[in-house]
Structures are given as structure tokens and as C-alpha cells.
Image (cartoon, rainbow, N blue to C red; front, side, top):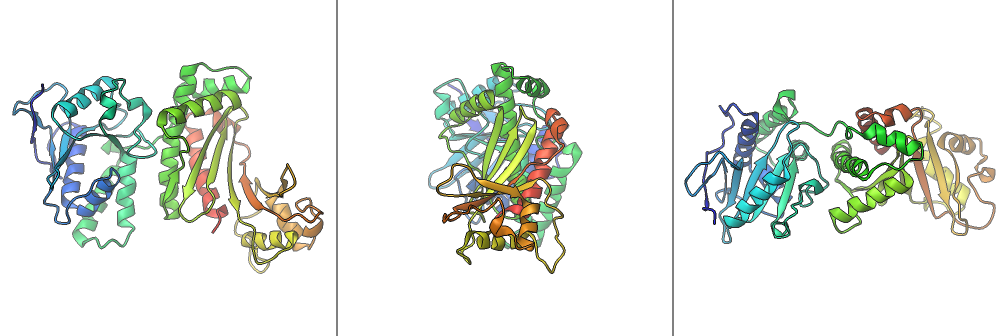
Length: 421
């Protein structure tokens, strides 16, 4: 049985180590020890909490085992909470394009088990939807190790929490605010080794071409693409949260990461689609994002409630459209290119639809009552959808890098302009 893990080196904001990974770990641990709001924020994401004084929290780099330092399978750090019921976690950190291997993962989980610790925390540039749902790639094949709590913080997730604190009114002291600002500068510096998700897997173009031709990609190609999609949707949630100033969370209907990946792989193979829904704190309806891989297009859509200020369907639509055009003001979003408006009716299988630009013109010209958008029976509109399908993007869909930029820029555009208020 392994020896208990003992304290290692104290973290510092001014590390002298040659390893960039050690430097990043030291600075991060130093920030958690010095800026209690950051410590509290991150601990809450893994269902832990510390005392207000901070005296119960400690973090150390390169802990030793039984007082003996080993160069083999040495974790980057350990954090402790000395409370009525003590809690501790082993921490393994990666930067740049370094990935934690499954062999390393099992070795560290073994250390957690043998040292009577409570959890493993991994930190890297790899993203996941929630800290308590680490990337499926990091799931141990050992069933005994799966019982050990494993949490994952991506560097982008940490960066987002820092920015969120700086933008909040949580009573930060001047020193805390300055420390967080300096830490954010470090995280955003190209030499820090911190990066977001910037490209789909290497066989992405092959997958796009094969699906477009009606072929069947192999299983590894499908699974790699789905894993890349999950990383991108995790980052999209962080980007949209920052842009909108509200909590945005990817919705996971299935109860496990395994089932979610299986469902996504089957959907991609059968329909050529990658899809995600985002719950937005200020909206009743989720934002849907669909990457139609075989057709090489991307679509953003959201459902709006029917205005209650009117009862007649065409008047309801006119009231709805006022948000996107005021007769006495210049239309701030141009011609609403590539945006369509859909109305859903209780006794009709298909929705009625028009371009948003044409719908606005019908409203201005007082022709909405007889427009294709309005059914000529006594049905009432159930809800109204807006759907944005940007044009001339097929070449970008095929590119590993450009598809990521496309998704992020267009998601922000749609969210800023067309979500329910």
C-alpha cells in the first residue's frame, strides 16, 4: 500500500521553476490561497466550500509520498480542506497541447485510493460541459476507480470564472481585484500555455467529404468528431455567458456522458448532424445550434412566446416584429439576412414561414393579414421561431479551424440580436 501523501512546496505568484506547467500550477494555487472569492467560486463548482477565514484551505505543489520524493507519477499538487470532516484532492495539471494519458489517470486514481484522499482534479486545455462531468476520454477503464470522484477544470473555465468575478459586484478588495486582473493577463498571454478549442480533429475534412458523398465514416472518425464537438459546445457556453452577462449552460438530456456520446455518434452517422441546446438564464426557451455536416451549413434557432397584447394572429405577429423594426428608427440589424420567422399552429403539421425581412415589409405595408405567414382559419399561433442559417459558409464547414470561428462568431451574433428578452 502506498504511503500517505505529505505536504510539498508552497505555491508562489513568482515561481522560479523552469517548467511552464509548474509555473502555471504555482500561480494558480497561489491565487486560490490569496484571493478567497476565486477559491470559493471554484470550490463551489465541485460541491465543496471553505470557511470565510480561509484558514482551513491549503494547497501544495509536488507532494511527497511518505516523506520520499519520487520523480515517477508525481502529481502536480494537492489541496486540503481541514474542517470537521477533512477533504483532500490530488491535482494534475497540463498546459499547451499536453493531454493527460489514461495510464497517468489510473496511476493518480490509484494514489487517491491508496492515500485515503477524496478526489482527483485534472486541469488542462481540454474542455467539458461541467466540472463533475470530465471528458469521457479521461474515464478510467478500471471499474473500481470509477467510484472515485473525478473533477475537471479547463483553463478556459478558470479564465471565465476570473472574468466573471472581475465583472461582478461581489465586494472584491482593491488588492483582490488587481491580483485577479494580473492573473487574467497571465491566462490570456500566448506564452502561458492556456488556450481554448481552436480546431476540430485532424480527420474532420475527410468526415465532411464522406458524409457529403453519402458514405459511412468509420467509428473512430465519428467518435473523434463528436469529442471535438463536445469541446466546442462547452466553450460556446462560456463564450455566450460572457457575451450575454448571464448563465448559459449546455443542456444534457441524457443521464451520462457515455450515453450522450453514443447518441451524438449515432445521430452524426444517420443524419449528418451535430446538435446542442443551451439553457440561457434570461430565456424561457433554449438556443438550438445545429451543424449540418453533410449539407455543410450551420443553423441557430430559438422559440419566442406569442405576444399577449393582441389576440388576432396577424396582429400578434405585427407586435412581435416591432422588436426588430421601428418605423421611426433606423433598422439597426440591416435586412436581417438569412433569418426566417416560423409560426406553429395547433392543427397544422407544417409551420408557416417567411424571411424576417419580408415579414417586416408585410407588416409595414399592412399586408400581414394576407401574408403566407398567417393561416386563414380560426387557429391561434402556438409559438414563433426565429432561425438563422448564414449563407456562403460551406467552405468554412470543411475547415478544421474556420468551422470553430464560424460557430463562435455566428452564435454570438444570433444571441445578441434574436433571443427572447
